[in-house]
Structures are given as C-alpha cells and as structure tokens.
Image (cartoon, rainbow, N blue to C red; front, top):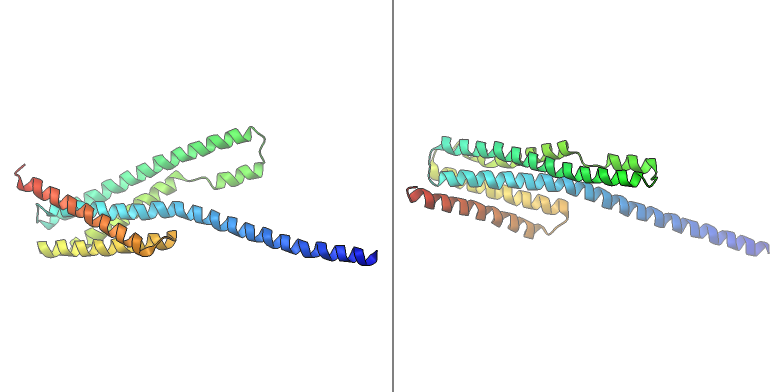
Length: 219
C-alpha cells in the first residue's frame, strides 16, 4: 500500500510540471500574439502614413514640375501637399479610431450589464485605442515621408537634375519603407519592396504625364 501511495504521488508530481510548462507556453504564445496585434496597428498607421506622404508629395511636385521649371513653385507645391496631407491623415485617423472607440465602449457597457469582472473592464479600458495618439502618429508619419522629395529638390537649381534627384531619393525611400514594413510585419521582403516601388513609380508617372498633357494643350 505504501509503495502504491508513493507511486501515485510521484505520478501526480510528474504531471504537474508538464501542466505548468504547457500553461506557461500557452501564455507566452498569447502574449506574443497580443503584442504583435498591438504593434501591427501602430505599424499600419506609421508605414501607410509615411508612404502616402512620400508618394503624394512627390507626385504633386513631379506634376507641377512637368509644366513649371521654377524651383520655388515646385517647393511651394510640395509644402502645400505636406500640410494638406498631414491634416487629412490626422483627421481621417482620428475619426476612424474614435468610431472604433465608440463601438468598443458600447460593447463594454453591454458586457457590464451582464455583471462582468471589474478587473477585466479595467484591463480592456487600458487597451482601448487613443484617437489623439493615432491622429498625431499619422500626421507625423505623413510629414516624414513628404519631407524626402522636399529636401531632395530644395537645393538643386537645374531643372532636369532636380527631377532626377527627386526621383532617385523617392525611389530609395520607397524601397526602405517597403523593406521596413516587410521586416516588421514578417512578410516577404523582396515582394514588398517591389510592390511599393512600382506603385510609387506609377503614381508619379501618371501625375507627370497627365499634367504634361493638360499643360501642353493650352488649358
């Protein structure tokens, strides 16, 4: 009897560590998934904002550069695009995140009526998105991207050299943003870089071509 009792005790002791290890591994996986989901939200706003600022401002400057060779006109156009785009991104992100916040708060109120745990409510409130932070992050990211073509064109007087430098600087930045988004998002690097680069080239080429066509038609 004593040997059977000790054997059962040893079995229970051997089972508990395995259960503890399984629980610890599951908690680590859940924590990694949660951290990655939170990071992906900020990554989306930052990368998309910077890429939008880069492509839209560069396309504006290339479009104006198709009909106006004056450096002042080109820089002012880019600066206006930076300010307008940053404000648009901030307002759009604020409205979007605020709508998401309203939905989650309404869901929490419905759950509170079902007598949920107060600690769970506090944890959920801490994880709620902040519209102001999201708006500021989007505006800042857009501005950072828009500064690339502005800085590239600011100190070059020659028209053709200026266009070439803007195109080169923007192409390099597109590759960097594509690589950064792929690495942080754990996506294929080459495919992401090519996709972002080709998309930026298309936007600039279409804007340049259509503006050149309309400008040469005498409208």
